[in-house]
Length: 404
Ligand SMILES: *Cc1c(COP(=O)(O)O)cnc(C)c1O
Image 1 (cartoon, protein in one colour):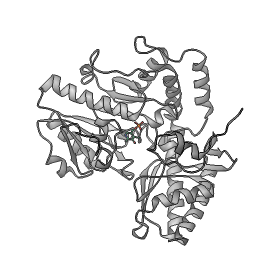
Image 2 (cartoon, helix red, strand yellow):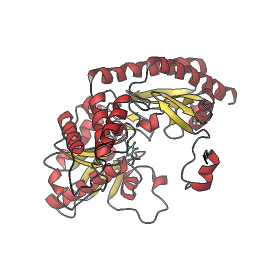
Image 3 (cartoon, helix red, strand yellow):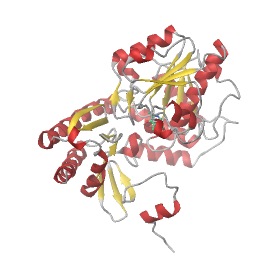
């Protein structure tokens, strides 16, 4: 007997920590999705910056199918070829010398923070344990990463939070100078805040953080879970700034939709992650690694990366043209294909109201906080889909304005 799940099953059977849209997509191809009723949608959400090559890209499907017939999982009692190829490929493309693999962004950040603490402990002693991060930042939902994140609403109400964590203001070096000292073990920052509203760091800010870290023998950690793997038009966002971290974390786009995460670091820092200090059952899983390798080899090419920049311009032009007609946005910002449109004061807090209106018009989009409409589409979204998606967004905005 076949059974077709419905949206009300969500309320019956799923833990209530999410509130998904009413439609249930069942199939995807490129930047299009279809729901149970056969309605078609253009996808500007990209699974929250995850579906870097859209849905069911042949390069990823082929890699998955080929690996599926060979070997899925071994545990870290053995190593495997796809994981070794992925690690080598990441090292060759970045500042890093060593890679730790896991299955999500939160886990990659958990590893980064534990490594930073351990490194400071090994080299300098117990007292050097302070982690500085930023208000409005987001680093994951494990208890350590959510406490380092700068949105207290996500970490409060779960009992005592881990200690030694300080929050400064993003893009404000003086606020960091007020907190940094010889007891600082690491500064963790997103080169562009994602969940916090699509806010790029200024070059002076990241350069200043690098200097402060060097001055105080602290490690600089870049959380590139959302900005990495081509999202901003370079392989990693740090490459725009010419500021090199000691530790970098990646997930989301890295697997193109397959759960995978990685923490990258240098030969100087890596030894503190000695045998037995940390681990993950699924880390370096062969299926995940095979898909991630295919994703990065396809993305880290001039065609794809230059295409991201071109598409950025198209998104901007369309959003500006919508804004000339309706005046709903205060600012359009972002890098590459991580784009935010901040709502004008008259529409304060109403970004989320656009999402169901967009669904009615056949468009999937995102928000980043209450005031920012966010788009994180496939890095290879066809131009025709951008034009059509923007026509649909314009109709959704027209409805928002009509009901204001
Ligand atoms: C999404 C995100 C995370 C958390 O990743 P998960 O895979 O959900 O654990 C961490 N940092 C940033 C910047 C993110 O955008």
